[in-house]
Image (cartoon, rainbow, N blue to C red; front, top):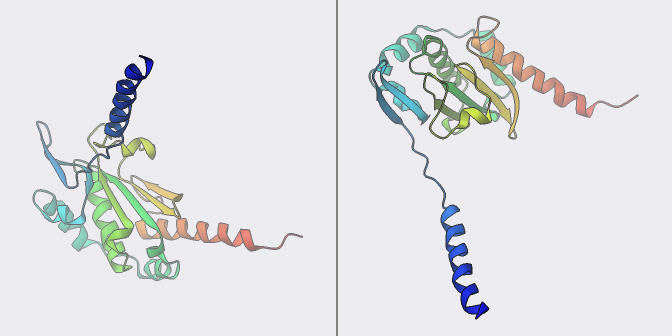
Amino acid sequence: MKKILLLPAVTMALLMSLHSCKTGKVIVNREVQTQNDGPMLLGRQTSEQFLKEPYKQWYDEEYNDYQPDEASMKELRKQHLKSYHITVFLGTWCGDSHREFPRLMKILKAADVPDSKLTIIAVNRKKESPNGEEGLYNIQRVPTIIFQKYGKEIGRIIEYPTSGYLEKDMVNILKKDDASVGDLFQKKK
């Protein structure tokens, strides 16, 4: 009798566990219509989304007008920027994101960083994304640009560069990472 009751219970538990293991589908390029802000991008985005209206207007203007500092660009190439993974949290409603994100994209293009090394996540005014990635990275302000190597965060730029130039702050982050790697190989006295 116990075996007869146990079989349906085990079967039900197995089915429930299989159902809970089903992977969720990540929606890319989600756009929502908001009452106060109009169209807004939310969640993971491709860079092509910013070439569409209404985002194209602010994106193109800043991208075309910005001239990266050539000395910093040379240093970014020397520091192997394309060996890092970059995650950007931004708000399509945010003035700081309108300024810094197109500049970042111009810098990445000039440094030949492939799209596969970039994750773009758009958040709402509460700094939330549909999949909750902002919680993993403790996002408080946007834009936040996070640099990672081998899955470990090595630095971030929050809202605006402290030096006044995004590429100069990026060089400083990469140089700190380079210095910390050098420390591992120094001989102890």
